[in-house]
Image (cartoon, rainbow, N blue to C red; front, side, top):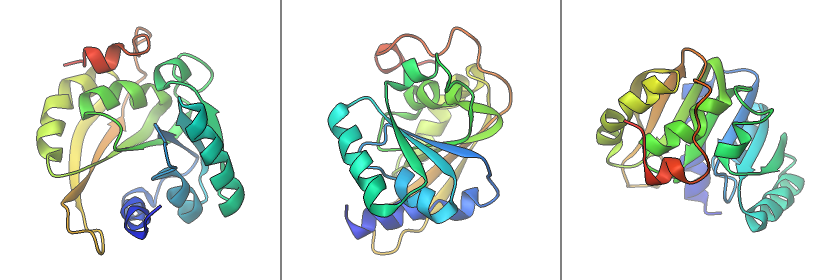
Length: 185
């Protein structure tokens, strides 16, 4: 992990300082932003990734850092059909998919009253506009885009925040792979 990746992950801390409960990092990959956020906030964290190789790395990273986290190996669509459905106060995702797709992967994991935070780059406003109908269909409310200042990272960064206002309808998420092929909205 590069220092700039860790700083990027930590840039969302002011936006989630009032969140308590549990966190899921959807498509965790290298553990960003999940591990730095878990260490900074102390939130009980689930690092969700479908790849066994990533899961092994994440387990080693948790052991090395002492992060309050555990790894779940599953596709988000499958995890949201089981006991993880609507069980988190906060879902985060960084560099996973377009926002319309991410809404279907993450919002079913967030409990009503919780928050979904997607870390995005320069086109965050356009992605937010395109995803507003998907967010609404999945129980989300209005979408807010907040610029992030990341030291030593000249690229434009933003956080897209969606409050979970009501339960996700039972038909979502659709089966694995469908959200990527046919995004909602």
